[in-house]
Image 1 (cartoon, rainbow, N blue to C red):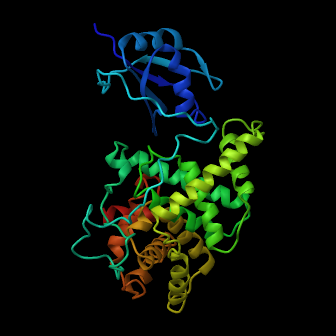
Image 2: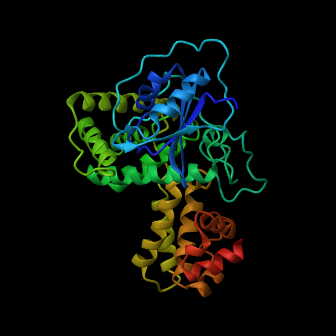
Length: 383
């Protein structure tokens, strides 16, 4: 049986970068490429593709059960078809220094163009008074044809990547003592960025760090780059080892330079469109209209609506609905959660949007079985 030049590698932690993986296997033979991937069920895994079968055989023989980053690797032959050319591979670029949170170096700076609506046409009937000139309002279709989706990352995995990166941004905002609007804007920057770029091509944690750094400036709460880099490294290392927060000065300088570089990439990708809508303002105004019609516990209703709204901003829903639609959907579901069904069915507070369609998009973010009972019935009706 022919031995594959590809090997499948698993068992390593999230601090291992592509460059570290490359160095670990380069003594087995000439490497053509290393692909790092992640899935919700299997965690992180890699395919190391060599230029000949002998190198693959050596990798399985010598690197299985070897220690990398304090963990024992599992290395075995891969079943996936090789793309290795028969000729000698091109010269490899110099590898950048290895740091804990860097997954891959960013590509060379290039002029980015704002996304268009040609890849996923808008529905024939818009959900609400959308701005037709907005470059950042995408079709309400699932899944979106994002670069990550086209690169082979499943919709579920991409959704999880967006959400966990958003939670990382929220943690950064809290560590840096920034206002909440900074994290909301940064999540929007991050999600817009990954409508133009694939998660497989960029370090999402560096993108997130650059996004919060930029957002702090835009919202006039400037924070020192050193503080952002330090908080980023601590968040990345605390997850695995709470005692591994000491960083060499050289690493800190490198992280700072990468965050600055990604800030420029972000600005170019966003076409310097850094003033983003804040649907929480629309939510507060809509709640005031509701209070004029019905007696309700405003703080409790707004607290639940805020959860729905934050989840929407953490994913792609905030790129598919307008601020008015987001505010209406969040308030509507909060009212249904508080069993205000009679008022919801008779009010005109939500008449400016197609509220049933908007609410169904919100509910699609969740597993119906994990919703409160009062919302499970709503989800089944809208399904």
